[in-house]
Length: 161
Length: 279
Image (tube, each protein chain N blue to C red):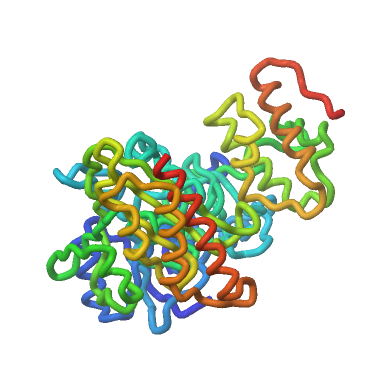
């Protein structure tokens, strides 16, 4: 076993992990069940979190490799009572159906907007290229990210036509 | 969980090599981990995490540029040289790799050593006459042409680490083209083509054409290169080069793409790629 320290959503956490344990399993074991396990092989993006500010698929990150890292999950971004603007934007745009991909989508949007505050549609599509949604067809998700960018930048929202 | 019992975090490459040597084939190097997370090699009980060995970034080695092995694909995209040199080839090909989160995880060295048939960077580095530096009990520099004569997992010994890939610096004007053919943006490639032209005026001094995803390992196609090199290529030269490429290579066949279909892909895409690189 390996002893590691992670800062999860601002909270310093000591964990003992198996040497081949994946970050998603460590996070969920420590109650971070907002991180969703989909494919388990890095393809679907439902498990993405920010690790030291970078978007990673936590299902194929070795927990031991993340030792000392700062992790942000969707629940760390905002909660039901105090949602982040990106999360509010997803709700407003109706960019959700079953909701399983949403935490990952929100984190991918966060990773984009941290670096590119005013993305165009192509940049949004590239930023979400690792996140699959099997319900909605992406139109409203892209609109939600556009709106989040506009709101964060103090501009009017784009309305769905 | 699996058979992995130990996790080592060496601070230097030398220390990593020492652990690998001491564990005698039972230790495996961990870089980005995107392959290792899905498939652990048989008989391995120790992971050797290279993330603290300082193998990140680009270094000037005089006549070549070295990209250190643990540089992620996203790191590479963020380097100005990836956009400036070789007509932006490194940036363009890097952006074709997998998805945004995976580009944050996959390392250049990992992509070159693990080399899946559909990997994007091996063919590109091969076209750029790249060499890998390998650290074991000593150091050896191996041209990628040699490195990809067999799968690296068979030629690297268990205590060796690829520490960097060296790309000869561009001389004169260099133009390039890269294409990844697949059914969607995230799909495994059915074919990747890299074309590079080193120019003197209008004349192509040297031409490199590499193909990926059609055989287990990427390959150069000298039969097509010789139709272009040393000339001011015409449209007919390009068409002839594409036909020779399609004839020279025996594509792999799988349930998605037949041999004939892949051959046709080569003919069409080599033509387009060379055309773009020579424009």
